Every structure is written in C-alpha cells, then in structure tokens.
Image (cartoon, rainbow, N blue to C red; front, side, top):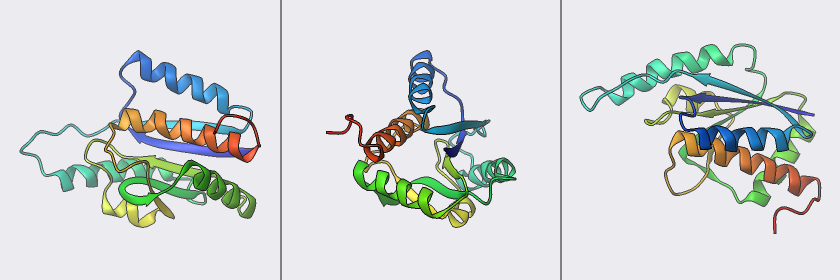
Length: 159
C-alpha cells in the first residue's frame, strides 16, 4: 500500500473543502495511507517581503519533512511539470514499482514555495496553467491521486 504524506500550508477553512477532502480520503483508503500535515502559514501584508515569508514557511516545511526525506518529494509549483491524469497515474505507478519509499507532496501557501523547498524536491508538478487557492489545490490533488488509483487498477472512473 502506498504511503503519501501531504504537507500543506494553511487549513481548510470552509466546511465544503473539509467534506470534499474527507470524501477523497475515504475513497483512497483501500489504495493508500494518506497523512495530511497542516502547517500554519505565515501572516503577511502588502508591505511584507514575499521572499522572507516563503523562507519562514520553508523552515516549517523542512521540520515537517524530518523522517520523510527518504520519500519521493513532489512540490506543487506553478512552473512545475504539467501532467495529464493518465500520465500522472503512470508516473505514480512507475515510482511505486521502483521505490520502497513513500511519497511526500508539498503544497505551498498563497505566495508559493521557497526556492529552497523546490530544490530539495525530486519533482515539481503543476496542477494546471490556472492558479488555484491552496485549499482548492489540496482537494484537486486528492482527486487526481484517486483518479490515478482508479486508472492504475483498471476501474471505471476516468473516461
């Protein structure tokens, strides 16, 4: 069974996001053990330096990575590699078949991820050319992991 840790800045504030997350976690339970590690995002205003905020958040992410650094690390980034659902499923299948390590997926906050986090990632992934809130990205990511499991198991879900 796959073990996937999702490190994410911020929490799901609205109930509808929490319900969507719960639904996908339930659907994924036969295929993967998913651990959600929520990290408090740094508060910032228009006059704050975005790079300084991202560096502070990176330190928190690095602490959350302790004990997980052997996993295949995927960072979500707007400049990451775009994948189709089928290609993403094949990538997960390939990595799961070739590694005994777990997966770690990192979702940044509103300002994105620090370069120091992007450098330690084994892969950067873009969910879309569109920009999503980190709450939306979290649910979309879970849906795409579920879709990948359905594709890889030959079940009807992806048409």
